[in-house]
Length: 222
Image (cartoon, rainbow, N blue to C red):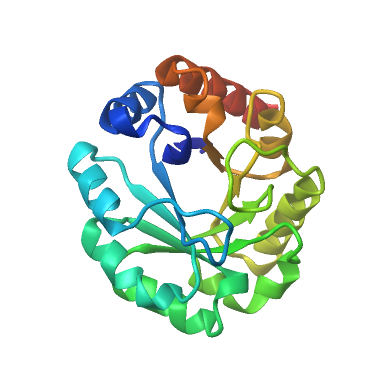
């Protein structure tokens, strides 16, 4: 099933609970939390305290995308704050197997993320460990960027590899997911669609989430 994951990076932080509730009314089922440290990516966003506050404001699963160095050091804090899913970057993890095992040991869904320049086949050995793979379709660090077209081939390659290996992980895409790209992204094989500006940018998250989800599900049927 195709799902929309609203990225709170594009929400109004003064009205975060209201924006998330509106996105949920529009059909969103998981909240995407972009965590940036100013080192792995050139931006700084939020940490466990915001996740803890958000946990009190919604019952939806919280998908914490750690764009940080040394993620092992912070995974327990995000787990304690209320994260349900945690994903880490292939490029940031010296011992990726150990890191994914740490996430799973806390009872959370574990995901691995690849940047635009990272090949899908590099993940082959650890794919049996993950619940989802997040394909970055922009270079991480900032919202509102243009979708990188060759990401479609990466999504297709990942879907083909999943079938070849007989695995059931889900394919998530983050970056440039919008009304003019969503159909192609879904048709390439993505199921979890992270959307920031497309949901929150026009200040009408309920309406825009509903419209984007309808377009995504229509594409999945064709």
